[in-house]
Amino acid sequence: MKCICRGEIIGRVTAGASKLTGLPEGLPVAATANDKAVEALGSGLIEPNIGLLSLGTYTTAMVFGSEYRDETENVFTNLSSVPHQYLYECAGIRGGMWHISWILELLGKEFADKAVLCGCSVEELLEQEAVAVPAGSDGLLIVPDWLAPADKLHKKGVMIGFDQRHTRGHIYRAMMEALAMRMKNNFDAMNKDLGSSPEQFIVCGGGSNSDLFMQIIADVFGVTALRNRVNGAAGLGSAICAAVGTGYYGGFNEAVQKMVHQEKVFTRDEEQHKRYKAINEGAYKNLTAMLSETLQTIHNVVENQSYII
Image 1 (cartoon, helix red, strand yellow):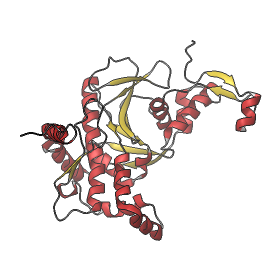
Image 2 (cartoon, helix red, strand yellow):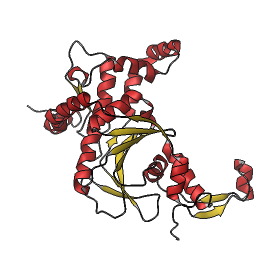
Image 3 (tube, helix red, strand yellow):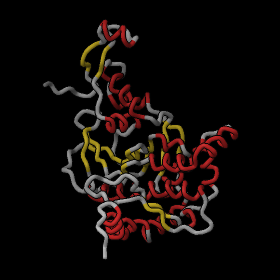
Image 4 (cartoon, rainbow, N blue to C red):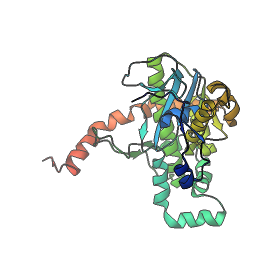
């Protein structure tokens, strides 16, 4: 087996493949990298002091570096698409943006039909309601553990703090806030181990299409959040590898400069940032640990039928 470097030409489209795909015979085929690595490249993460938040079905965050780091509880080291460079990835959220999809599914066909009549998507319609909800969702907090890890099956999602004020707009916003605060805490733990402090955040994936979510991220993390024109960045990262491999650009830095473009910048609101910091440090950061014993008991009773007498 031969190890191939990212951006290296590994062959050309054959006559048979050309007939099946419509791609020109002889077209160069370039090696790329794993999904998170090409996503980072396509987002423009090729220098330190910038973070990347990937809002996908598995939501995670990472930073760029030039040294291999041994794995810790808070840091996973991955190979960057840029040869001889690395990505440091923090703990993520299983299910990630699916938590948002779950809420939309609960609203059902009637709400979807209403969105059609309004000429917008269900996400846009619900976001209109969520925008009117204050930061902190009037005390509604969510633990986004709908998909438990295999070694901790007792972990469950939790919504806590309901009262008569709360609407579907509150639930939608509270879920965004939960994803943002969980990832901030994971990201901070990683950067403490690394001794780094990113000054900006690139946000990619489907969730970055939401201006509300982008602003929540800027306010929770307390840093500038950037959205690129192409925010589904894995395909673009693969294209950058091909552009470098074929010599269209002289290197990865040049290719990123030419192919990755910012669309919108979100700066933190100081009052909202202070509010989220108080909520996170005063309540949210410890919520999962506080609920752990209760969730374990519920799991034992309901799932294992270990009734307590």
